[in-house]
Length: 373
Image (cartoon, rainbow, N blue to C red; front, side, top):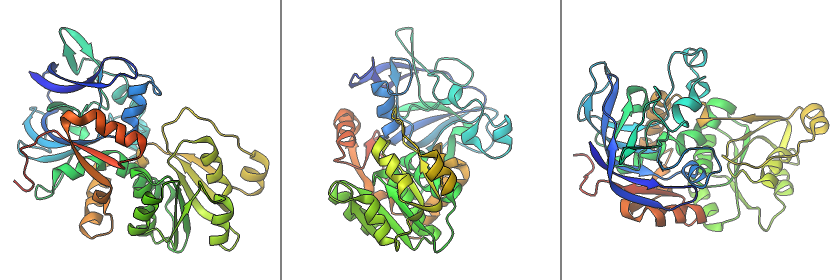
């Protein structure tokens, strides 16, 4: 079937919304999803600009929310009319998946970043030529086809326009804290970068019971929002020595945990320096940058740890409903980071994301959608 999709024709090109893209036929365990909205994530920008390897042309988008239109004969968990949030695809059969760690799926790259569907077939074509996909989802479309394991059923009374970013940015930041670092009540955490991922990590730190939740950024308006969302302290690292400031806030000791969402070399290195002895920093940005680590003093003598985390070590079908429960309880106000844009304004939305003007742009793909109906 023909659909409308935002296509990136070549590396670093703008998005072009085209109405002649052909969507693949459904497989036996597929869902056909009418897209309502999609968040824009920095990972989309990394693929658009070529910071991560991918084929072109490509349809990006991996924070989709929509309504199931059709299901394949082998689908057991969904039916037409279900409201869903879309996330990454994991095979479900490899050792990591069977151990309950789908973010470490042995086929993760092939399934999500190869540009094709998990079976190697084309997700999209245009004039007979293949158009690459992302995360077996490509949510910058009016309709898409996904595997059953891509989807998470959500409460139909909630506003689907808000929920898409739970599939990546918010589950990545919160999962890094709740699933990977697992701070105990009374411990401390510093979060570098207060974009969507960083604010999610910060809110998760508060939920976990951290007595110090320190938000660090160079934009005062973002730091003000961090305070609103529960940061106990904020630091503008553009005008302040961040390592000294963190030590001052922790009686000279440093924090138990740190999360870097920036991918900036100096900032990643600072996230190690602010740790207390035995502390752990998680680096979770998609970045080509590298860091210099003092393996003797930091890693050995001070027993500090650096961990990389993919997608918050999440199980979307478990973690996204948990975040929605936190949201309903007033503990995870992720929607305060969002701003809606028309689908036709995708390039402006992406530019606002890139500049930091908007923390989490959300494209409204179905203008006629009404929450709760």
